[in-house]
Length: 451
Image 1 (cartoon, rainbow, N blue to C red):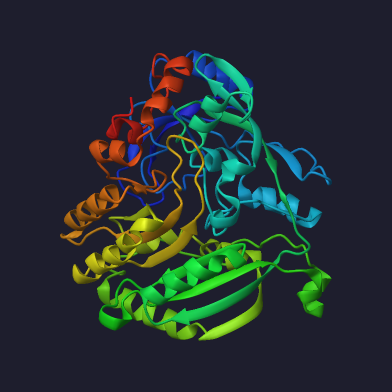
Image 2: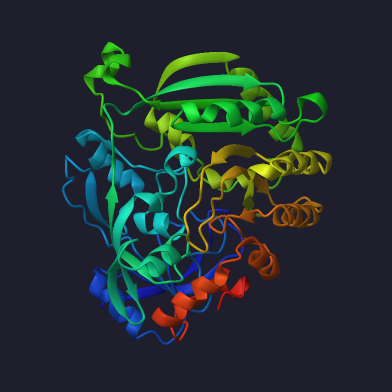
């Protein structure tokens, strides 16, 4: 059995660190043994890209999935590939793209394991067309405290969907079979348009996103009045071979390159503040073209721009930051506008604000997407008014029938969680069967009283 060590762990936001005993099992059998012999709480962890405390277990055991690494050959006719839960999206793309395939759903970073993608039921710029990651998982093997089982949406719908976005609370995924997307190239044909206010962006997305596989808008939360929520909308699809220039055609299916820059140390307090973020937003807005169609971008540039800078989370300083992401139904799209008004009037800086459209969500009781709008905000910790502002946003989202994304949450209350996720009882029914002694637990589950 693999040995372990005590480690201080935090999420990507570098908030609320806690110490746990970290084990790295070398096989699925070792995972089952760890679960069956557990004397205290434990939770799985991938590459640590959940922003909050979902992959931490203070005083317990954290099971790293990184040694659960194997990849089958990709079936050229179906696009099916079976991989270990420790394989990252970056590593999967390094094999899939040269073979003419792309991951069906990717978040804003490639540094997420397949196990983590399932636990968070990740979404991307194409949810309005192709749904979440779990919509493309045909089967998976889950180690639970009562044994290991391979399930699909057909063979065991309750366990399959409870695991989708279940934040590791239904077991530790050890392997999954995923249907990949065939592509001709590793490039994207991108249309870009700049908008002077939020209303015009949302109108363009509501009426035009159906014409694109991928769509995302960067929004400026530091502006007010007629320019409130100005932003840049980028939409596109995988580029065909004939759209590439001669240099690009020489290596049309090259995998994305690694980070070219790095933040070597944690930035001093206050580097990201109202003035610096406002200046950055002004530069970013002016840099974008008023309108440009058909620009050819690499998949790394279009999908994962922040992966070009390793340890970029250090820019937020020693206090860290949180990402606040909510979703609301179309009927309450005004919550997006009101949220930005609240942030702007309270002078709470947001370094990065991203707006997307969601299609129908998965049936998982903790799966985040619901049909409508989602806004994600990177917010540095420090402003004294921040807790009150976020509490206000929580209430607005809950009253609109919306919800927060648990893969990014670090502070929502247990009471509001139940209002946001009304199907929690079905999750608990599954957990009673596969984890009767509540071995599976995390800092997040204890904070939200999910135990």
